[in-house]
Image 1 (cartoon, one colour):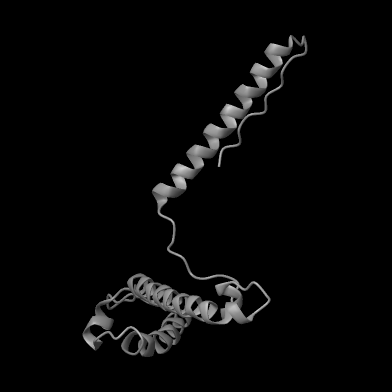
Image 2: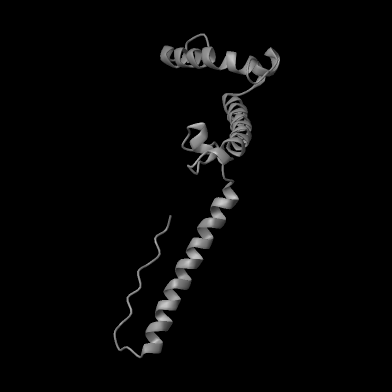
Length: 141
């Protein structure tokens, strides 16, 4: 803090924010169709989420156009094209996975690993081997 009670800020941080603002303002007022007071009330995170949603909506629209294009082109083409090939993209933007779905996938994977380990142990027991079964611990992620 400065002697007069103001927080001292690094000039480079202010400059970086100003550069971001110069980039974000035209997108917010243009493509996102926000009113000026709506744009200025947003946090950076909220703006990024709105922009990501805008890009996902655009990708869905292009995917529909690509599907229609495939329907038109496919009878006359010997190549089997996909929508992504027709659009010249490697992938489309998808909805981000929720934390619950990621946790559910991790739990399902862990359960599958336990089941596989149990199946190995049962197979060993049924064969009547006298060898000691070595089990590797499941790595924690």
